Structures are given as structure tokens and as C-alpha cells.
Image 1 (cartoon, helix red, strand yellow):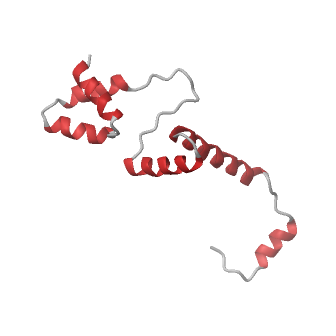
Image 2 (tube, one colour):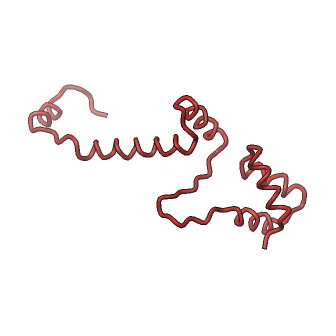
Image 3 (cartoon, one colour):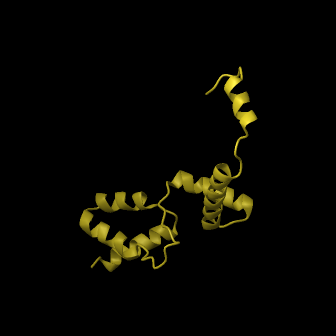
Length: 117
């Protein structure tokens, strides 16, 4: 069982906007055992019951970019991430299914003078 004092400290630090690496470093510097720190973080991990939920750990710089984009689009950060993923999946689906090249297009591409990448 993790120390309740340590769990409360981690929760408070997260509320103040610190990421997990920024929280772990001072704890290690102040002599907290690694095993106890890991147990406390494990206690705070969400226990998912549904397959459609995902937990992401993002770099603080990436999170700032997402927050800025979410504010611009009037989304929460989780809604912004969901929108990015949805658009990516829809784009892949369109790419794979939407357009079959016609024979003429293939021949033009084959005999074109444009340099291929």
C-alpha cells in the first residue's frame, strides 16, 4: 500500500500543473524510495472498464500546444485529442477507399516527365 501522504502530494502537484517527471525528481532528491513512489503513482492510475478509453502521458510542451489549439477551437484538451484522432482515422479511410486510379491516370503517371519522390 502506498503512503497516503505521498499520494496526496502527487495529486496536489498534478492539480497545480506539474507532469509526473517533474513530480518524481524532487521526491527522489528528498530520499523517497523509488518503489514507494512507483506504488503511489500506480494507485493513481485509472482503472479502465471500457475499451474505448485511453490514458496518454504527454510531454509538457506537447500539452501546451494542445491546450492552445483546444482553446482556439473552443474544446477541452480531451475533446481536441479526440478530434485529432477522429480526423486522422477519417483521412486514412478516405485515402484507402475513396479513389481508385483509372488506367489513364496510371499511364500518365508512368510516362510523366515529373521526377518521382
